Image (cartoon, rainbow, N blue to C red; front, side, top):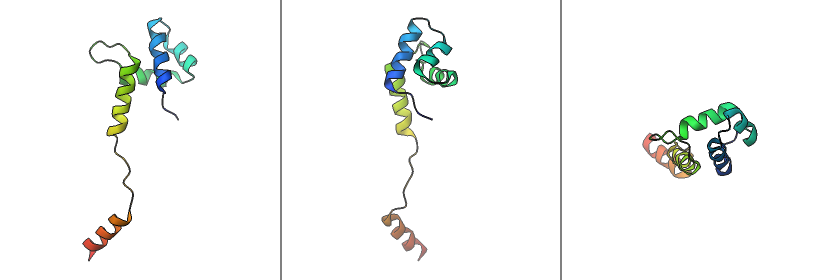
Length: 86
């Protein structure tokens, strides 16, 4: 599984403006139709309901930044835990 690229989002935006149907757009960007549908649901402008590639990319990046990251078990954390266990 891979994420959509900035170029794919731009392609989606252009093809939607040219009134292509979702299945044609999905074939063009080489993704499944469900990927395109999810992309449009998640990243359309909430006010106008239109899809904009730049807005979609910013929304995607914001979600990725806010996603919880894995905390590695570092040496400092090990020492802290050992101190608490004592």
